[in-house]
Image (cartoon, helix red, strand yellow):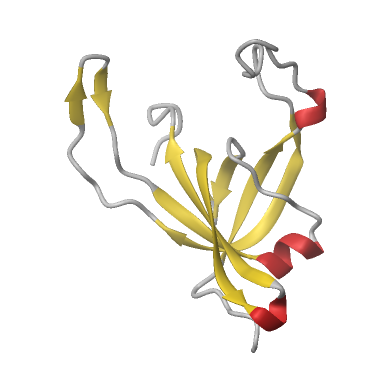
Length: 134
């Protein structure tokens, strides 16, 4: 079975979390202050932007439910020696600067001759939509 291709790939720049250099609170298992980051990595990805959706009001304030994803090939991740994890920061998609954070991972394209999944779908959301202009 051939390795799947991306449709209309664009370069993305990701800042990965450095788990070994980040201080964690032992009780809550959350980072203290800020997450330490590795140097940036550039990968080709297929991008799907979220559809605009009305924000849902809640007791804590406005909640945006829209999110998008980037689709990455496992072979590209392996060649770059990169492992994507929740909390990684996507800072650039194509030529546009962003402040997007990976909040869910979904392995896709499972083939027996490839030893498992061949693609990784990384869902993202924008935690600070006012920080970077669209």
